[in-house]
Length: 433
Ligand SMILES: Cc1ncc(COP(=O)(O)O)c(C=O)c1O
Image 1 (cartoon, protein in one colour):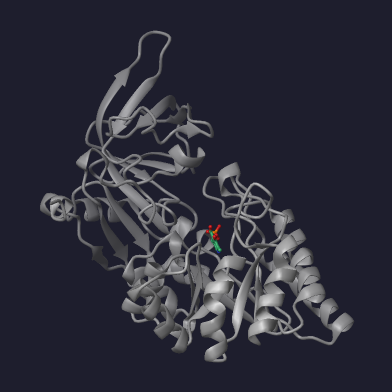
Image 2: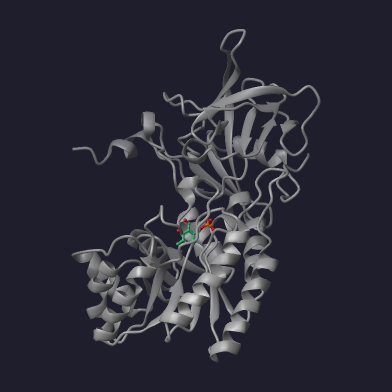
């Protein structure tokens, strides 16, 4: 049976075997590829050491976290609940960094303090956050990380740029003196400076960010021993897309960190925070074709599949494009973006939600696009690739009262294992009063 694409060992047989055990739609992950991506990230060149933190927002399912933890990566959590989920997955607090827009209050604050005392790194993201956290950090002599707003940003779409003036993340450079005054007043030290330009952005901006953040460290942060360049390493999901060359980016970072040492005598260790790079291509969504229609002579050919925005909101949110595979009942690969057969037709792929934006072929701005493929048959498996990151973790899955989908993993030895059960209807309504 054919493999789905050049970077996986998963075949169409795996899809058929998984469909025999699970209702569509469901997620399917490729452990061998997750591990290969972890190794590639850890091998990125560095001057005085590199720590790779997995941005768990990309996919926070327990088994995925455990695989990545055991591969030697640390964690970046973007909410306190994410940090708690990492702990529940068995990850040590000292391997977790919290980079969030809010400081928990009440009982949650006590839990946060407990985790900070156990080694969780608090990454300060605003002056107000610093005011809230500084007295506790000072009392226990805890060092802090600070996320600065680098003033340069780039994302695969405008809404994923987190580094320029259109984005509010981090302490803006105009606020750095105030942050430093507060830190001095409390006698606390920023031992790491952190930035993140955005998700899936331009590698050239990633390089520029290295220079910007090293400049900020030289000017404002004498205690920093570590620099975190964030995530945003672009991945190629479809043929022809250009991915970030992490060896080249690492080599550039190494050169600039070495030059920083030559200028200042300070040796900085580096951190990166990939989410997409680790998970994007290691995940698939298996749906089935429910229906096919045409909107008149001057209209479009549609197919309707049983998993759209409720399992993958990325096209609707950002106009993201994902590879599609059409697999027949005997495992025949009828169509694939990696090997388009002759006689392909232009088709629009819609999900099953009552929302015209529930479409897997959307351009940015929500405009319907077509994709060339062999006409799928009703009941065929329609597989959406490049969906390991920001899909299971980021969908409005209960819209139209659909239930959250199951997740499956193909382990390194080829075993098919369920890692999340499908939500049942009683679970969907259980908290209603
Ligand atoms: C602070 C931070 N780090 C890392 C990431 C991961 O980005 P990516 O998935 O593009 O690697 C994000 C994503 O938004 C982020 O906000």
